[in-house]
Every structure is written in structure tokens, then in C-alpha cells.
Length: 328
Ligand code: ADE
Image: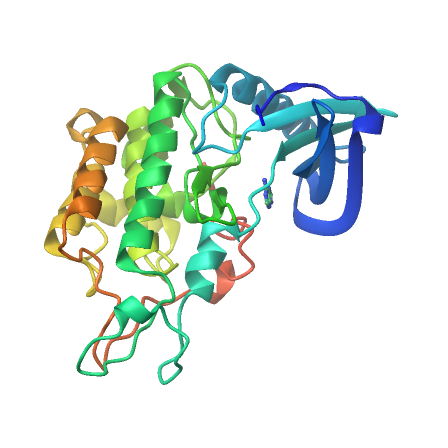
């Protein structure tokens, strides 16, 4: 079925009570919409009555950006919009497996349990610690890079790329979501005070408030780290001011123990201080594709006894990104 993006009437929309998400703007509910006579599953974002100016502006901006970006299999596509009794609704493609951060964290298997992905069990009987295979993890990373290459080809900057803003379909296809902070100007200088997700934001965006596709590439490097660590918290326990100072001094996230040197090199390239020195998303797609084709395992999720995955900070376990932010 063709994904279209149109003005919907209220009769096209059916909402359920199942809440998929909530934020300052309002909420996202599971529902269906009728597109070309066919009723299809949808995540329906509802701007709450009395939403503040920033939320209303972000909502409108998100619709405009999605219309400008057009259809791509690795982004959450807009099915249509509707205003009913003064309330605004945005019908989005459904991604039944939910957000990547939760999928990664839920894929962690307790030591001693047996339900792990069979291909990950080693001959020595070492315990598998993820239900996702190394190839599935790299495929997810490559899907995100492909979606981001499309966004950058439309000169759209995401500004909040992180595992919590990537959604997975029932067949584990990754789709970049949450365009609320996105801007379509190729380069964006933030002038207003806003909370910034500091753990995944590029150094020049933190210091100079300059956002480009290359600052999204930095965030993609952090997202790669989140994938490899199965949803670990980057710079766990570090406060924003200290992190900024250390990044300026050249400090970067260390190599996770289960990460191959070549894959860590890709992360380090994404975190180069000079934005022009970072790879493009097209480079990243090529690199990750060749790693998937390679027989070598770049993510070793079959770790020995004393191996522990990166910690998940308790202050971000609610997964709303709000505690993970600071004001500039
Ligand atoms: N939560 C927010 N947006 C969603 C979507 N498009 N699919 C599934 N869950 C969601």
C-alpha cells in the first residue's frame, strides 16, 4: 500500500485507549486510519489542549518537515493530519516493536537463562547476553544511517538522534522518528533557550549551538555505542558541565569491551572535533553494509564470565529523555 500523507477527516481516524507515549506536547495513542479505503494501524500523536507555544511550534514544524522529507522506508512516515474540535492529530506509521532503547535493554539476557539467540551460543558454553544477533544489531545501525542519509539529502537536521528516537517495526526494520526538534535549513543556529540532550549532542552544538548534518553524525556515533552496549547510558554518572570540559580536552567514550576495534574506529570518526572531518551518512551506510557482509563479528555479544554490560543510569530509566537534558 502506498504511504500517502494527506488531510484526514475525523471519520478516517479511530483511536484506542493504548498509550504509546506521552510528553510536554500531549500523547501518542495506538489507532487506525483509513488510507485509500484501507484501515491501517497508526500511532496517532495528539497535541494537547492548551499546549505551550514551543510544543505547538514543534508539532507544526514536525508536520512540515515530514512533508518536505517525503517517504522513506527508514523513517517514520506521516500518514496524514487532522484538526477536530480545535485539537490537532498527526497520524504516523506504526512501528510495532517500539523504541530501540527499550528493545536493546530488553534484549539483555540474564546469565544462566537459555532463551538467547541460538547463533550466539559459543562452543565453550559461554552465556549469551543478547537475544539479538551481531548482524541484527549492525543491520539496525545501517537502517538508521540509511534513514539519516535520506534526511541529510533533504538538508534536514534531526538534532535529537538517539536510540530512544528510533522505532522498530515487527520485522525489526529501524525507522528514525521524532522530528519535533528537526530543522530544514542545512545549518541551524539555536537562539532560544531549550533543553538539550547533552549525552548525544555534538561538541560544537553544545558550545556554539551550531547544528548541521555533521552534528547528527556525532549523535549517530553515540547511537552506535548505545547499540553495542545494548542500551547503556553514555558517560554514565557524569554531569553535563564536566562532560563538556572533558570533551573539549579530547576525552571520548571508551571502547566497549564487546566492540571490535574497527567498529570503535567508526564511532571515533563520528566524534572528531572538526565536523568536516566526520564521515557522511552515505559513508557510514557503505561502511556498515560491508561489515554486515563480512563474516567477522564486530559486536561480540557472547562474553565471558566477568563481562558486564554498560550500566543504565537510574535517572534515565523512564526513557523520556527529560532527565537527560540540560539548558543552554
Ligand atoms: N510511539 C511513538 N510513535 C510510535 C510509532 N510510530 N509506532 C509505535 N510506537 C510509537
